[in-house]
Image (cartoon, rainbow, N blue to C red; front, side, top):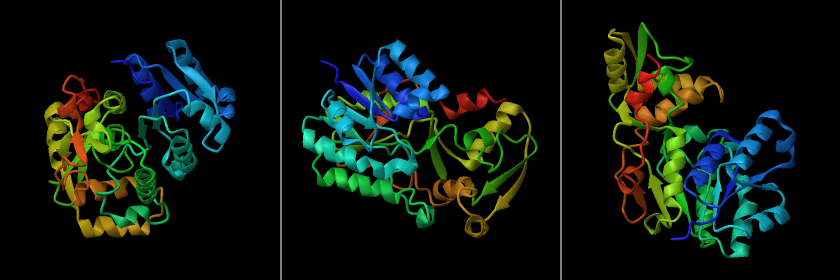
Length: 309
């Protein structure tokens, strides 16, 4: 089957860059939309040159420039948006253009986290609208009748795992560790390059059309207690454990302003409320990526922690 032509929005960001590389690795004709300012930014310009050298076509434009969006969208079959959380609502013009052009086979909006329709922690949206805006974009895509796939990868491996879920730390603790709540609620983590690989596998797959692709790979679903046990096994050393109750964690979150409290917000969501795992995937609206694509070799939490010993 002929590979779809793919446009990546946000290709100079970490995930966008990996998505573009994955698209090229899977032999899709690949386009990346970049703002004019990116070409004069040393880091972004190097990324764009690397993508060009790998075979990507770089198009100048932005989510605020309708003319450039129309020109870019007309050249492809699939559009993947990987813009930052602060730019989520900027996708509205892109959605209008996709609707207007009318030839896009699949749109992947910028979600790439917990399923915003399943997150139950309203405090996460206090003053930041972290999930509210994602829900708004999903509803707009549905209302416009645009074919889509949403990617729910929960947490990136680079979030919380390097610190063993210890806010403020950059590396795993060697002596003492804090357990939030009862320590038994499970969260899900996926390495960013693996998120990209699963996403590109899905773009031409009819089984993922107008559904959420959930990523819950075996070996990547852990509670805090299980993470600590795994780390203790790898280091051969027991950690001194202290506990923070749900009430105390919530109190601390409310007394701290965003973004200083963001790690604790995500801990509360995943490891207290269980926003990643409290629900079963409904086959009418969702599918699980590691079941659909068993050939994708992904990094497990155990493998990742092994690099930190």
